[in-house]
Image (cartoon, rainbow over all chains, first blue to last red; front, side, top):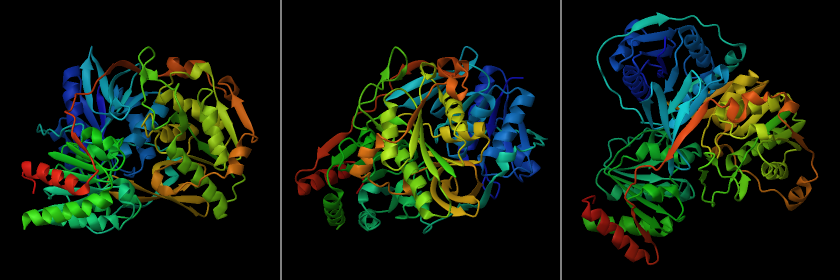
Length: 324
Length: 263
């Protein structure tokens, strides 16, 4: 049979990832247009009800590999390759995130399959799927087709909306013998939180700090500025979180949070795609950056080319003064 | 042990990149440079050697590409690689991710590395995937977007950020690891190293030299096809202020925010 196979990622408590649920919903919609069905692959210890519950997002079948660990790509490549080969799935779809990139890439090699990543939209054309893939810093969009089966589609973060259609899926347990090399990466700890547990999702105003702040000290100015607004908080890019300048809980983007505040004020943020996807739906975007060519200016409503060290303290004072 | 570092030459960040409408491929005719992420991979290899916990006998820079790619190799050697390998063949032109990964795996196979390092993404392709493609072909464990590596007996203990926070993963060698830019601060090459780079051995290899079947690479071996190239939906251009008089700039920002009831 034809069909679309989707990997559904979950955390250690068995909660499925929002981007995976979006991919399931998208696959179900596309399968309907193609006149076929969508199915999910899950690994690890997920209950019968938890697995069958994915039917709520439109998939009719869930393949479960109970003994395969969650969180590392290569064992999951083994599982998906087997399910695809045994059942003749014609596409594999992944929601945005990190693991989907690795699993999709592994499948590409294993099955000699075409792959497209950072896909923002999938459409049906002549009974086949075509992916829209933004390239060159999102300045062009390539429509990409697949020459052979299966085609591997890796979505961009938040590309696919979650759609609850109701229903339950048939759960099929699969036994997969893992490749020897797939067992040679061992998860020591998963999902460690670093830094304070801050809440950025409830804020109306977010000050997003990036590498342009120069050092961890720069975040003090961001916190001052956020404090000058009502309901302001500070967010951060991956680069500065990885550098230990700010807590992981405040991170925006591919491996962080997605936000849509009333105002996102980016200071010293270049605007890499991985950050953009986590904040581009903010109502108003203001950017301060000394590099006039920074990509952030391409999607800002107001851009200030200048030295943030000069501008930020004065801006904080001015806003405080306005509020009295 | 031998470390191979995969490198790529990419259009310089300051150059406006364009797609050749005839071939639907990136126009690589302008000024090129070593992919910035790859400089972190070379630095990571150097630090493993200098750390002394593993005996690193050789660091080899490996690339695939046209003649201009040799410049990326020279930079890689100036940064510390001992020698380089350049896979170049007309048959490789137009390779997609699937075909590129296969070709790179073949050239790596001919070197038999104990560790393959590469940058997590290229400045031009933004694919993030090559490391994992190559690893599957080489049947090696792999991890991408790694920001810390420590030698732990015969394993490399890696940290990276994934969907739920930081993961720590131990990889048994041989392995393929792609690194992020937070992993280290690459050194600047010395003038002596830059001058000496041209004298270090550079092996040029054709597809046939490393056992690549021409039908599996290039356009013939690619499993995706670019159907069309379109303009993204136009977003209204934002207002830009060049900060000359900061007091005035701040006044303008505050007025803009007030107009939108954000203060």
